[in-house]
Image (cartoon, rainbow, N blue to C red):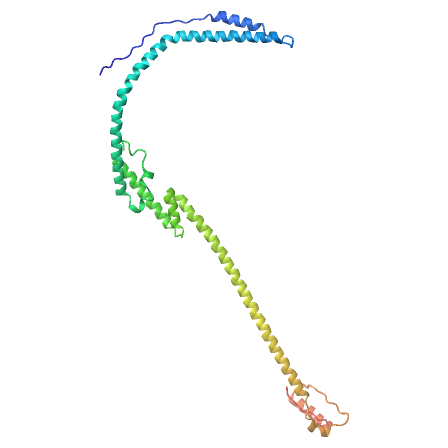
Length: 305
């Protein structure tokens, strides 16, 4: 291969400009307008001066551009020829690089197949939905500098980590474990899955507490209703017993009021009255009362109550 080096030579060139003279001329011209105040009458003159200054400025810029183009002409010619020669390298570079790229593509393709085989070997089938190969594929795995030992190590670490996180989710003992696992499968975010279950369980606990409060309130209402029912029945029973006692008392009083008219006839006079006494005393006292009745010639009947 011929390694001829392009040698670019440059002869000394000098560019000059009468800057001092131009500067003095510009400053002299500008000095004429220092502090000048134009009026409506001098408006036309002012416009002419602006046009004149703009023209001078434009001429200076054009002179600068023309001088630059003239100065750069030799360089532009060299640059054009050099670029044409540089372009000659592209054809062999592209030809050789195309073959190199083909070799590299073949190497990457074969390594991908090897990585896929290692993936199927290390990742259990029931875990592959959680960690699809395309989702865990390392950015550097295709590099020639990354050996298969490194790839196996990284895949094994991912498997161990995923199994541990699935175990954490499954051990939470919630009826939303399957939904949380589906969420984890979608984003492989343990914190999000755990939060999903935690939020659900907190809401569930709140709902159950509300249900328990409502059940307790219903039970308390039923208990109070039952107590009130028992109280009503007790009041009714007491009232009925009171009615029966009163009825019995009335019947007893009526019974007491009755007198054996035939037995009392011999002692009854035209103006005799029938009255009812309730006497409370000892047996001796009652006997004395009865003796008094007899001595007085009164008819009486004793009815113990």
